[in-house]
Image (spheres, rainbow, N blue to C red):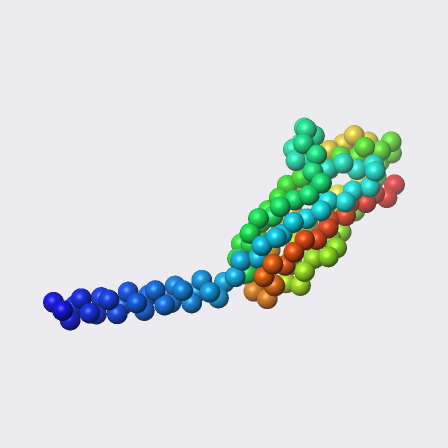
Length: 140
């Protein structure tokens, strides 16, 4: 009986060490805050009905080589002509990947279009990677 108990205690200790090593190897990337910069003829909203304006996104905590965090925004052309809305990220840290279209295409006056994005951290992403900007600009 003592031998079984000792074997069980050793097995539990080994499992604990393995779990601890895995948790120590996978770091959390925090402070993933994004500033949304749009020109004067473009507005960004949290929902299709354009009730809550968006000027920043909090991506939450990401794990190195873990699942991506996804966000959806709604973009409206507030100008007086149709425009092609271009999207570009700036200041994105090494090891971080933002997936989104580079353009929303031709957007009519007062048209609201959906913008889906995801942010992921590679295994080499720096812990505390920080903030970056998403720029929305129009070309008529």
